[in-house]
Amino acid sequence: MVKSLYAFGAGFVVALGMVGFQDQKPAEANNPELQKICDADQEDRKPATMDWEAVSLRDEKRLARVKEIFTSGEVHTTQDLFNAALVLQHGTEPDDYLLSHELSVAALALSANNHQAAWLAAASEDRFLMNLKRPQRFGTQFRSEGLNKPMLLHEVAPVVTDQLRKWMSTPSLADAKKREAEYNKGG
Image (cartoon, rainbow, N blue to C red; front, side, top):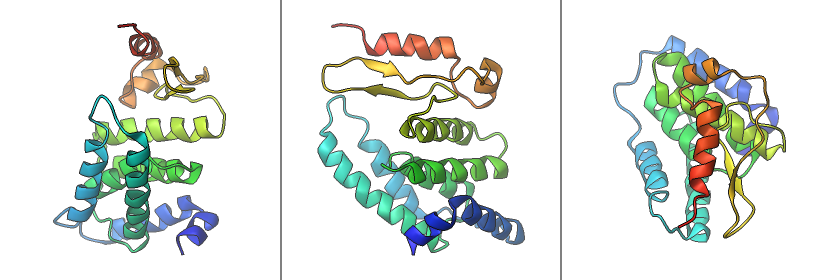
């Protein structure tokens, strides 16, 4: 079922979901399971030294469950949209990043001043493009070619201005380049 939804088009699924949001009274409570999954996702990313193999296995399980929750209609609030999008941002396939982007945009549409959703909409678009081997637009994505290799800012297309980056709660391109230099300081 999930694969057929992605094949049909995640954007269409989000569009249908938005019709449902417009017709329904907002849910009174966030989905506690989605919050728990998102919290675990973020907790895995805190340690300075991580076992990425173990994190990847946990990410796969979280990703599968978030997709089940989404396709079964258990995403009810702006926070649910954001939580699901954040977990999807750590997926492995372009469709994961695209759905993350769409859910972030939906969260932003429902809560215009949601700076986290704005940042995630930009970051998920960048990750989607990077994984298609295309330049990113906002400058949120960095990549290393292996252990002890420099962390590099993925190529950035010149079409997005720093003003748009500001509106999307992302750093300026100059700040992204400073961050790249900080990642690669010795010592």
